[in-house]
Length: 363
Image (tube, rainbow, N blue to C red; front, side, top):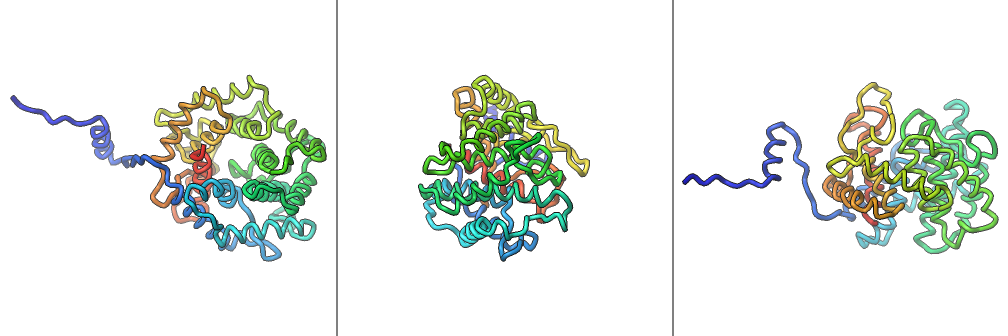
């Protein structure tokens, strides 16, 4: 009798992928926090050496795509990798932030009106004020005490908060029509970061009566985004999970259910499911699961909690682990263009995805 060899379904799937000329995903059993930390350190070093990041008074711009994910992820990555000392680039970044906080009335905006057109000065101030507060609040959360430089950063941030108009309670934000961090709807990204800053600040800052009017106004602005894209609503859910008092229970549950419902079969999320983004070069957004989309949703579901999202979060972590590259990164595609490997912006979304993945994996 002829004996036929037995093949596993995984083996047969791999053979089909090879026959099609497609890459077979490499499955790993564990997230490599040490490699992720090294990747983020290397990218921050590159960013600080990039000529376009240079600003006045010998400082560098802090960016949502490269600097911020490093700041948010490194406290947990340090504990995962047993790396206690900050890198030279990280120390220099904090020094720049502190310098610009104290020289707030002297430093130039990241993008002055005189060279970039109105209203880039106001937009730049809003962005930098929020980022400075979040960066220093995250540092102080790790230290366990709110420093005077962070208090000054919050004073600068509240000074930039809008007092009237459609953006009342929020912040004017950079709009270069580049999704998702510098666009007309990125004001909700900015407001979410401000909420994270308040929530992360130690010594009970979030309940400080002196800041209560500004924090309440921030909450009110965040509520105005409930009718926006699923991506914007997910950010608002993140803000609510940290600051509280933004969403009603039924609103939270609805956003969680919508996020879980659009999870891909492989455990990830794709970009088109989160918003009707259109690339400026006319190319089509990839339909497959994406590193940034998966990581940011995983972070938000993990922070929001709830039993209905537990299985989805576990699948997302499995996807992120399986798609972590050897250099520690989690690859992500640009929302704006089909960017080519080797160009300076090519890794910007990968930087964000890696930082957000590291945050998701700590939960």
